[in-house]
Image (cartoon, rainbow over all chains, first blue to last red; front, side, top):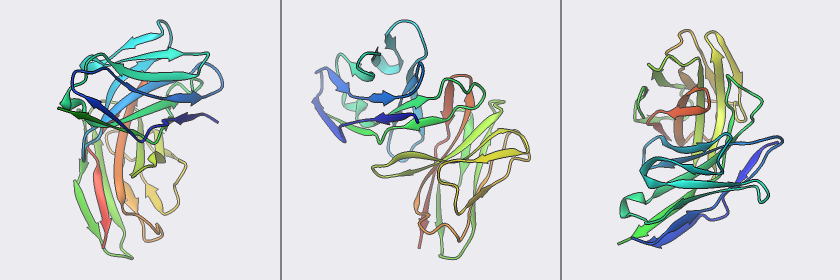
Length: 116
Length: 110
């Protein structure tokens, strides 16, 4: 069965510093991987995805993620954090064998807190 | 949250009552989903529907029911059989390789 782990409940970073939010996955076959962000009392907003191709994926709001097959990781990164990046971040993996139906399995989320 | 609306935003329920959460999408997506979000547990799939008049149980379907009479609509009923319904409920629909989420409904049992 597919699964995702986000080992950190919270990540603290100062504004202007680089940030990393970690994600590791387990899935049979080649994974489809996603990052979503959630602001308080809101739905999830799509940030980026990895399906195939270049291991470095660029997404919305200056975020990027690096797919590492040997380490089964898909860490979210940003070179310079903003206070407005403070939110809850979810990593998700999808079974690549289902096309029309996308069963996403989510991690437990990592709260990012960027201090001024 | 574009294209998916959920109502109401906040809902209060007395014990023993059934309540229905609305989800509408104008994205012309065939597949729709209901998730439950609890603190520290991420999102868990309740029900999903791949096409009109068809739906399947997800990982935590007990105490919930759904219908899919129209492509645009996928309402979720939280029944009195759901023992711990207080949570944040998220509806989603999907295009190939991406899911889009609604703004959510926060349900509180009094």
